[in-house]
Length: 282
Image (tube, rainbow, N blue to C red; front, side):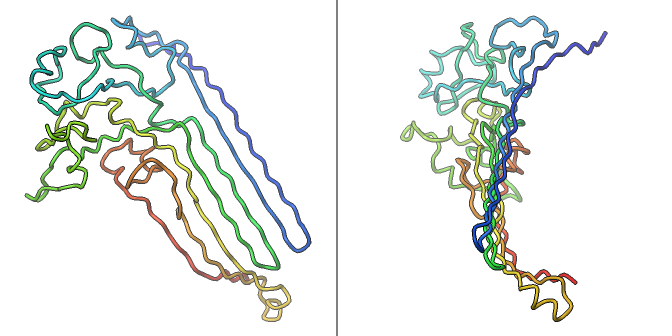
């Protein structure tokens, strides 16, 4: 029978602090938050595994498992002198996986824990800075993630056809060829390539980031001005969202990648927004 026999230990720390100080006509406001969340599977009644690298007990929840990559196949002789490939036929320029368990066969038994979780980053942090002087105010908020990864398997090494037209990407120029053996991507394939698309260390990307979430400059009219026209307050403002993003992810929004896990929807680029306006209170 099914039994609720799982035990997971979770621990971490969350720290927040805010500082507000008035110096003459200047009011300063500074704050920061930091959260670290970790966990470990203690018991899950795991079935016996053939190899230790397949054991998930003792690892974090949602731990990513995949193949270890050791390079590309150089030529046909390299393929013939390598362990037997159970994932299908391979050609020069395909990804070469490590025989982790030493049985001279490359298969699902060679999967290992790789990187961090792709769905639960361990570190969240943010901080805000603000200052106000005689109605003029400037504020900003930064936020980010740490120990965050994605298995970004949007395949730029494949040449897919949509509406009968091939979709060429600049990444196709940095593909494996005999003249370019140290390319960023494997050989170019027509359509999907399930062998190269397997979850592996090749596709792991650090999706940690630091982002300027918003920044605002405003001016609030003095009370004695607005009271004359029977208004509680008038504020003119200009603000911006996601104006700066510091990350190793190229041409994609690292914040969205954490939710899409590198699927095609993860190709949404970084977006910015600007607003100008006036806030009138009656």
